[in-house]
Image (cartoon, rainbow, N blue to C red; front, side, top):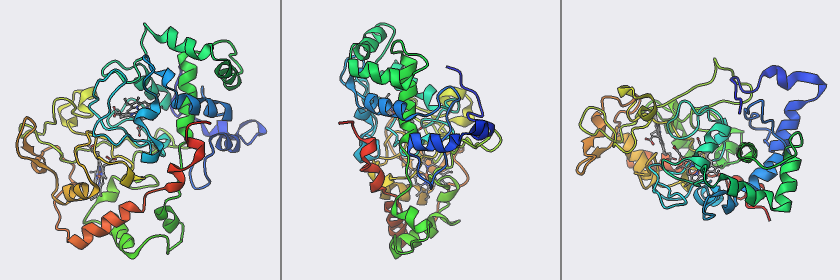
Length: 376
Ligand code: HEC
Ligand code: HEC
């Protein structure tokens, strides 16, 4: 698979007399309020790929032992999370990380909780399909042929693959599966929460408490907006017009742990450090988009904070003190913690107001959109 950056050149959108941008938006169902998501030149969106991807997303035949689909860990009613602290794969492996919501994930400049090298959905989706540390869907060299044959021998699927990949009519391949799934994931977008309507000018869309909460969230006492700003309330952002110079790759340590007192995180997962092995990257994770956050408990990369109230109190304390056990240590004193996470005195009223604001990010249009649910 060839993936280049910038993923989609501006010139390509303007090219050849056709309004390609309008065609791609139509294929993905991108609403007016949002930009066209980026995609690799090798995988331009079409309606056929998106529909095929939707079917595959809900199909347990995509896992080696046919017990799991993408939707097992990404349920639409939970904004495409699974409600568990950390997910369990098809063969019973417990993952170290919390399932991520998929609304507007297509705009993240990097994918997953902490990987600065995964910049396309195409590259990222190989992980749940083929990953073996831990096993998620459990497709491997031994069973890949069998998994492909399940789709090839199904006449309806075979026709859908031909329609989605007309330039390559013969056969099903893992790359085609991934291209279709990535296209479906690019369609999982929306911006119709009460807060979106408030930002668009409807002053009655949210309560007075939520308005006060929004001001606190966007103010210099709570500091949330520095890392959860922008259209997705998470500053990792890229769309089809973003260039290499304007893309951002944020990762921060927000003081969840301080194992050993020198900034360490639990050995099972030290965030960006796992890839870079740079000691300063211990505990650095990508700020998660807060869209639908009231539906995606428990919170943080390891699901270690149960409620939103717990999250807000975590920040007010400037980090978390783990008093006992193997991961004991005072996260408030973590030397690698971001300077933006520092204690502040919040009244009970202020905490309630910020929670009221976070509740306004629930987008029922998105979680009930029939275009995102299992095909009939
Ligand atoms: C066993 C549970 C499980 C399965 C099955 C699974 N996922 Fe995930 N997904 C996760 C977890 C956990 C993460 C976070 C991974 C990480 O940070 O390393 C994630 C992350 C993602 C992301 C990145 C989101 C972001 O904001 O960066 C996408 C996209 C995604 N999954 C789509 C899929 C698709 C499509 C499938 C099916 C091919 C799938 N997942 C199968 C658990 C799962
Ligand atoms: C320095 C950047 C930074 C600031 C400031 C910040 N956050 Fe975060 N936020 C992060 C990072 C990074 C994560 C993921 C950390 C992890 O999982 O280890 C996160 C995670 C979260 C989550 C969990 C999301 C999920 O789906 O699990 C919530 C909720 C949240 N932050 C809310 C807030 C609020 C409210 C504020 C202000 C009080 C705030 N954040 C301030 C960087 C920040």
